[in-house]
Length: 67
Image (tube, rainbow, N blue to C red; front, side, top):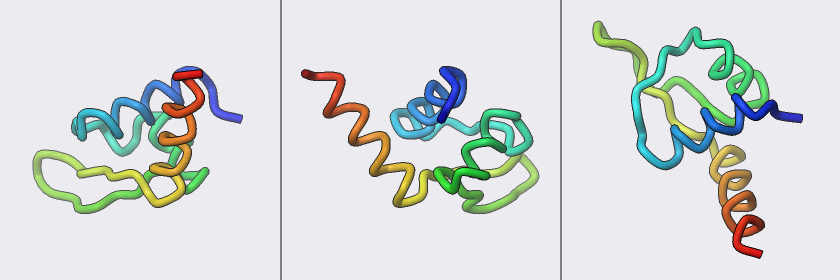
């Protein structure tokens, strides 16, 4: 089960594509759950992206929120 911090991080990545630190505890948890992956590493930091599972979970959360 995801914490509210992890859910917020998932939504932030899905909605804004914002750069986050790959070693952030919430990002690490999402990576462990295979919801986020590192796309590339560069001098400015890592680019993270949602996995297929992460996008599916985010879509289910959005759909369920409208009910």
